[in-house]
Length: 354
Ligand SMILES: NC(=O)CC[C@H](N)C(=O)O
Image (tube, rainbow, N blue to C red):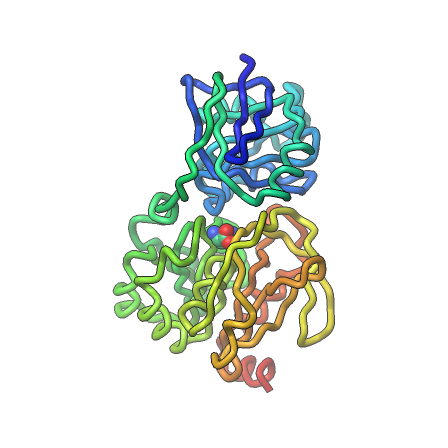
């Protein structure tokens, strides 16, 4: 049925709307620039309640499969595409993208001038938007509470390796846990609201996961997090990176329109090497806020110079704004997990932090 995408800045786009009810579906509108990886994006809990615009004009060509989801179901509030073909082709696929979105009742829209939508977001910044059959202007209210809607409810142990990692779950992607299991670690996923459980666990390292929304919604946890971060080798990924900065005295701010894609170049100040990363974030750590803390900026985005990761001056604590687990995107940064793993053993630590 014909319908509308209405942005907070007043712009309205017409297209073909597919949604079960009348709507409207309200979410923060953001854009993803990768040519592939739509299944991973739709199921990444960090996109909770966001409306995602895909800039690549043809989405759904290789269908949906049983392996590539980052969580049990799509997490996005809505999907905006130029074209989503009914025909798909891939030896792994078991459903079309459209059937999958209909099954999970995810409002989606095709026939939209996605380039124009993206231009508008780049000018006005991420903002709320509505998908509906009639033209409905979105509220300007800042959407909150997403982390509580995606994180696990109870502790989950996986793997049997000797090195035991506590993954603090703010909406963890499956591939972060898988990256640790692949290195031979065992993993306990600890929900963010059960940090007291860490006192009963014996673990060798900690990972603070990715997650949706504003990191400052987790301000109540910062004192406990700081104590735990300083105790064991710690890796922070995306929201986890932002929380390490906040816990150790830094500050975060919101970018105008965020980074979401599979080809963001990042330079490692330690080695001078540039690598291509997968990204999905709205917020960044403010470099100036690190003055007087024990953290220093190690990684930078080559395109806009924004901060992409931190290192602690004396302790084995590293954090990255990009996604070393990739999915979707290149695996150029998977060495971050390997170094984290090495940093857990004393000899590895001496080598890395010499
Ligand atoms: N992928 C993430 O962890 C995103 C972190 C945070 N929600 C942001 O948008 O910046």
